Length: 269
Image 1: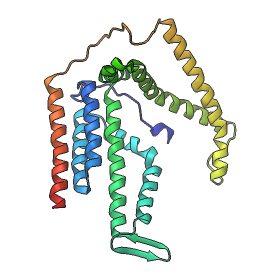
Image 2 (image 1 turned 60 degrees about the vertical axis):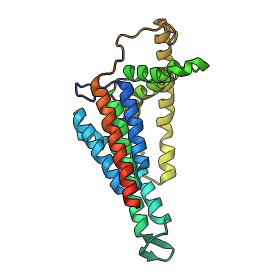
Image 3 (image 1 turned 60 degrees about the horizontal axis):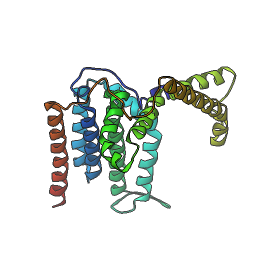
Image 4 (image 1 turned 180 degrees about the horizontal axis):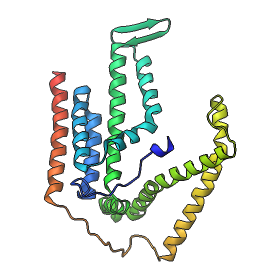
């Protein structure tokens, strides 16, 4: 399960999605999230499914990575679906047994919410799959740069966000190593009730925290040795420049968003 987590990983490539300006990819990601939350029904989410599948095809990222990004969050998706299934009482009853009541509206809402979460995970994961941490930092800093007028630390915020994303795969790998080492010493983390399993995580969490603080100290020392002093006067190896493909990508995303809004109004009338 630990090895299936792909959040924060970057997969180099030369696809059209990889070559898009990172600022444009951030804008498209925001529009995609708006698209999912504007959708009122499964028809609107169907447009989101088409958009996400086209993006994955153009990025040439294997679909198995999409499944890997979903797998660790299956318990959360199931929990959300069950809550909607049992706590929505409106609609025609399908199953009634004592205090349990399942309606057709509850089933539709369960499917709708589960599909929305899956699309949200897959679509946003594509941003980190196709964008390197360095370019992502530059993009976030450039987007937040107008706030420097009010002394907002745009570069520092962008750097912290990117370091956090970059360290996710490292901490996952470290967690896997610690778990393997504890199992080799006879630790049992799979049997017993919930409290026993939670207690068994203590020998994992403590070394993980120690390792995380040690890596943070090493990173700070390395940045200090390289005379890092923030974004003031900092130059960039690669300058961010937009191209016609970026404007085409934004226009296509806006068209998909407009299609979702049009479907909402059409189905509501």
